[in-house]
Image (tube, rainbow, N blue to C red; front, top):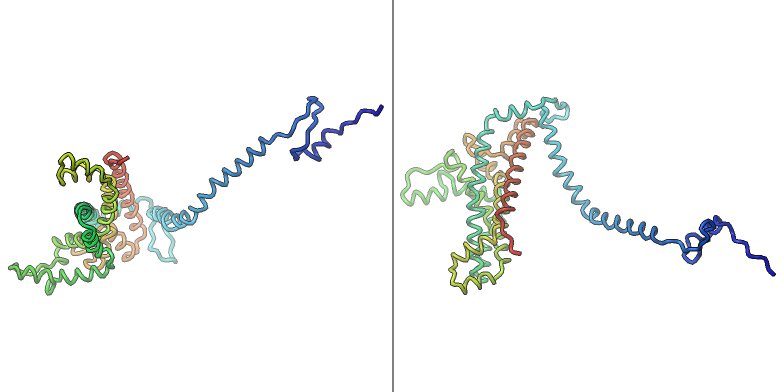
Length: 343
């Protein structure tokens, strides 16, 4: 009779075949044999797949995030840092820490109060050109024929395609006090002396607001027209069956459904009105006469590049950034309450 077969030590079997699924392990302590579990390997592979899946979107976003940090967040942090220092931006000099002195001096600087006031006036004054007129044009263009609608949108969008400097040159000729087109028309209608539109403090700011609004009307018209085209026809068909007029359909259907676009465009107009008017101020009035057209952006540019006062410029940038940020948060909060979404 053959002697019983001797079992190899457990450590030898584990060394030779523990990773192979076809082998069985003999566990002397338990007296049983079982196949190796695959739960651990599956869990590790799943973790690796999930980590790779979470990493892939960030790889696609990485170029945009890097550029955003370089061109937006780093200058923003650098500006906040320089607001606490005195420095004339010369490489041979070093910034000197001054604490909050720049902010105290800012509110006493000539032109700052006028810049705040003119910025607020521009933000309100451009709303008819960015909200009221584009909304009306978009609503009427929706009900016009296809050819007429294209003509309307094309005519209104033409100013948007023109270079701001070219627009400023055209309006300089139109508003010229001696041979300007507008003064010639007013004198032909029986007006008295010619008006110095760009040299009179009472007329300069309204002219800048009008030029800026005329330039941006086409952009907002396209935004509103795209939103109007997305409105469902079933609402208007049901309202027409009930005998609702065009005005009633506009007030009860169109404007409520356009509320998200109205809120967004209002916020866009309020936040960027001053930056859109910078070119016309710099080309036509230089912030004058008597600081009548200076605004937040031109004030920062003037203090930064004419007086080379980086601390004063940075402090004003921080103040205006916080003010515009508060306005954006307020409008965002109101938009969530006032907007009506068609689900």
